[in-house]
Amino acid sequence: MNPNEHEEWQAMKIQWKSTSVAEMLMTQQLRWGLRLRMLGSWVWLGTEIAALLLITFLGIIQVAMGQAAVGSCTSSWRWSAPAHRGGRDAPRCAAPADRCSNSWICRCGARGVAFAWPGRTTS
Amino acid sequence: VSQRPRFEDLVSDYQTMVARICASYERDRDLARDLAQEAWFAIWRALPAYRAEASLKTFVARIAQFRAISHVAQRARQPQREALTAGLVDQEPAPESLAMASAERGSLLAAVQRLPLIYRQPVVLMLEDFSPSEIAALLGLNANVVGVRLNRARGLLRELMQREAS
Image (tube, rainbow over all chains, first blue to last red; front, top):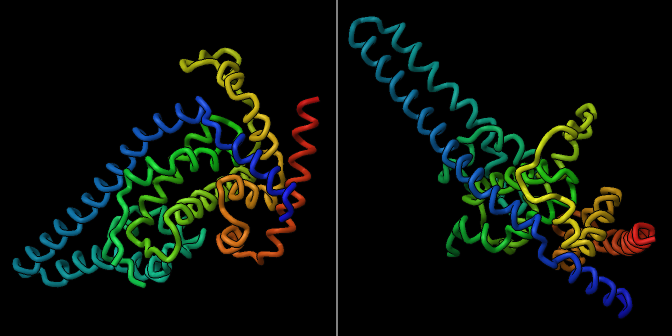
């Protein structure tokens, strides 16, 4: 890069970074929305786990009452759904975040549980 | 072993950068705000997988860029709508007064928004202080290609800003 080009870029960078009121307004407002979405994601994950445990519990009760087929079907159905989802998203979640791809964000981003599990990401 | 950065610290450090990246891909202020929120949400979700193989700034900028590109692609697929702003009262300060306060920067932003996508990506990152080699790594391009695109984009930017000023 020659000195003229460098100077031109420097001038544009200064212009670019001059703080704008509109931007500050935007960032203050988005913080609240972001907090709500983060909270919503955890609530969604909590609900998923609670549903999983509850249906497993119901399955166990049904087995205990002698309805082994119904009980095992109920439990296995509820466990197979997240297992299927996990198996599908795992290869994407296993990629290092620094090299994460657009599709990875889109696919996992559509399901709060995929990223809300910190332990699921392995390199 | 590197410690995982706190999300709140990331927001404090890079909120203006993410806002500028989003604003360069979306002209509508409300949609740009939504896009910034989407980008931060994606960053929050991806944060547990951060391995410190690149700087935090690169990590944040990369996700913000990806979200912005996805947003542009989604918008391109949607049918165009007419804005129904005539009878609506905006509770926020008038956009004109905000725009007047940063007229100079606005002209650069407007010029960046008009750049073709292949030039806009490296230009936004260059203006955010990434080096050409970092931009090449971030966009998965050859360093020479980035250099050529930046050079062409600089000429286009100059032309667009001059046209706007006259």
